[in-house]
Length: 502
Ligand code: HEC
Ligand code: HEC
Ligand code: HEC
Ligand code: HEC
Image (cartoon, rainbow, N blue to C red; front, side, top):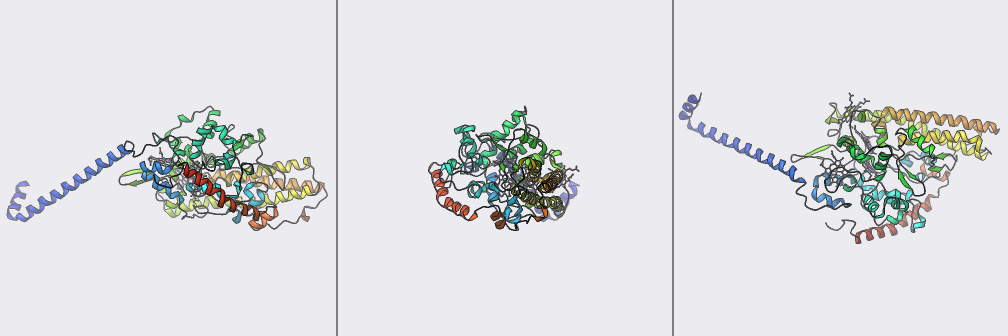
């Protein structure tokens, strides 16, 4: 064979040169590849050693961390984006009360009736909590309608301030008194240890809930931590007692019934309904609790598997920190596991959501009517003892509805559990109607004589429950123009922000 090749080259020397040059090119390319692989390996290995700046404990300015971890930082910054709408969710602003004005009636007497928007990206957390009418317009500490506890799930300045002030002292304060300290939106220090970059639980509420169940959160596996990092905030909680101590109500378990049992036992009431006078509960956002009952959690998936998929950049694999709807980028999320078309995968999600929302919409109409009916019964002289059974049912029905609705991903995360809870809510709403009709019959009032108010728009519903929206909005505008710029100025003077340069 070699003999024949050398004969051939002797006869046609130009082919010899071509062969020689081709081999040289191949050798050169292999060399390049080898060099780049070692370089990338070295880059990964030295990512931690090559930190450009030393991150201090409780560093709440994510821009500082970004110097060391530019890929995670650049994707994290994209949580400001407002460019995606799926069928029901997305990262844009959405006025929920405008879309579903019955909710104004469901929350009559509670701050949510004034203003409620769908969530958007993490980097808006500070702006949104400052701007919502729910935090009011406190010019002085005594004007506050909210405790400092309201900051807890908004910022990496929270663990810093808890460390400085003590946890109980932090919760005890008024919301506005920390306005010049809590200025950076959800960022690196909320989820990471500053030294090792390991996931870290920075919120005491979760650690304490584990302790009360005799568990140490430090024993959680790496995969569990990829959900527990989110469970610091995306959970049900309440402000306990006068100290407004943020507490997770998990001592009896994590289902909607377990948590209700807990609240009933400690006789917790979030507010007394303005129309029906029912002792109400407000669900927060039990994403973690409901997710755990769904098919993906039961196969061992964590939140980060869908909300923070891996990306590759120059051979380096890293987690996409643009936390948002996985439907923006099905190819990187669902399709890493499912061999199914984008179209089908999106349709599975929408089908689950649509089916649950059919029931949700029915409940909202029935519950709103029931609150109005209850007011009618009071107006016609009903007594406390006559009303008690109906009011209990209203509390239970609305708690179940809210548990699913406030957990924005629930109808996909755990479709069967969500439908189960909604079914019980609808059942109790209708039972409340029956109980109220009995009260009215006993008072010799015909339920048919009730004229339902017009609550077909947000404005009409807010007027019906007696909110003076014009004044509330004017006060808020003035607060936004005077108090907030002052907070930002003071925070800059203290070096809490990196609006200047690093
Ligand atoms: C420190 C509290 C906190 C932590 C930790 C946290 N979140 Fe959030 N999350 C929020 C808040 C607050 C919002 C709403 C922000 C707004 O609307 O201004 C939000 C919004 C979201 C949204 C809606 C985004 C959009 O584009 O509409 C998703 C999805 C989300 N979080 C998922 C997660 C996941 C997954 C984790 C864990 C990897 C996590 N969050 C950890 C507090 C937190
Ligand atoms: C199997 C994939 C998957 C996992 C795992 C997962 N989610 Fe989701 N999540 C989704 C999908 C799909 C949606 C619906 C998005 C849409 O309709 O645009 C969603 C929606 C959400 C939303 C509402 C987003 C918005 O725009 O308002 C939040 C918040 C959320 N998930 C948090 C979590 C948390 C916290 C965990 C873990 C406890 C988790 N998710 C686990 C797939 C997942
Ligand atoms: C809401 C929680 C959360 C926030 C906020 C967050 N991370 Fe992460 N980060 C995670 C999770 C979850 C992982 C995946 C960890 C794992 O799989 O063990 C991760 C992984 C990382 C890693 C390891 C490499 C990788 O990409 O998987 C680095 C480095 C990192 N994050 C940097 C940052 C920086 C810098 C910031 C701020 C700009 C930040 N993170 C903000 C939750 C968060
Ligand atoms: C990390 C892997 C992984 C990712 C990412 C993932 N899934 Fe799954 N999914 C699974 C596994 C495992 C099952 C259970 C499969 C089984 O039992 O056959 C499952 C089951 C399902 C099911 C059937 C649910 C049921 O009721 O049994 C649907 C629908 C589904 N996934 C849709 C999605 C969608 C949509 C996304 C993206 C938002 C997604 N999955 C992301 C692993 C994943």
